[in-house]
Image (tube, rainbow, N blue to C red; front, top):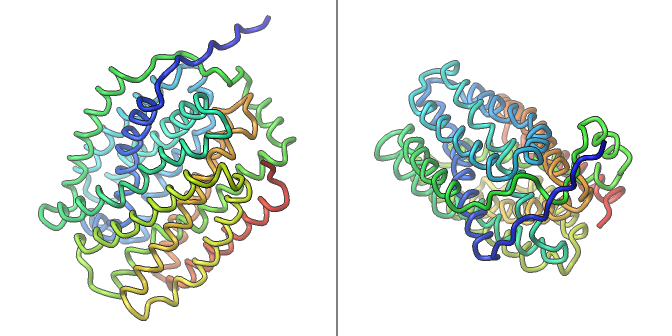
Length: 393
């Protein structure tokens, strides 16, 4: 008995596609990124150590291990329903977290805050990938990923200012309210398409068999995990490193994050403008190598605050270029199972973050920022090697 083939996705203008995708990602990325620069402040507000805060990040990331099943859900329920589900769990999780006191009370809301990464993010990637030809996909996905940089550039400096004035929990109220508004917008304007067009109804075991037989797809999936060995090491610890170099307030750290957001925006812009021209595999490989080198250099820039900030900004540029360029490369590795493949990329990243969030926090507290960066550089270098040996355009 054969299943009915999926219908074509509904036609949608490029302007509306970008507006919906970027707007939704701005909401979710703000919630995700809020924890990184303000983790020391949030930990003090909860009354826990930095290592305990890193373990909370692990709780959130562990939920991302559900991403492959999120990919199957995208095919079954459609992109719109999954996006609404992700936004709803985020709104509840943010409101709940704002009232937490202590580590145990924060575990439940952190689990809810992990669900959008496992469901909403791959759903939006499928939404864009199915409507944009591969030869132009890098440019459009790069435009969507501007949201990640825009959060650092605009939202987080504002959050730092609010924390300084009103306390660590206040940003969670505001973001929860904005998320609720986002739910209404998605409900009204997002195209309602039950099934994705390019994804066959295949079981998870059959998909995993196909993935293991496809060395290029497997390399691109695994390389994302290796990239986040370095990225998670960096993002979990850089705020604590800045506090060691200079006694910065949350609003000061917010300004530093804004500078990093500016260079991240540059990385997204470079990917959007050039990755389709230079080749996605070539561009991703270059990004891996440059990110690894920068992690090796970064700990030696603590001779002054401005050199440290410059190093943070340069790494942010390299990382953003790399991750934005890798999404279109991954999206076409197994187009017959695109939603699950993109979700497997989220799974690899989640596994890496699951391990590295507490590890990086422990290395920072017990050894040094140098040790954290060197471990990150080693992981990123392994990802570069895997891409060079196996990945294909």
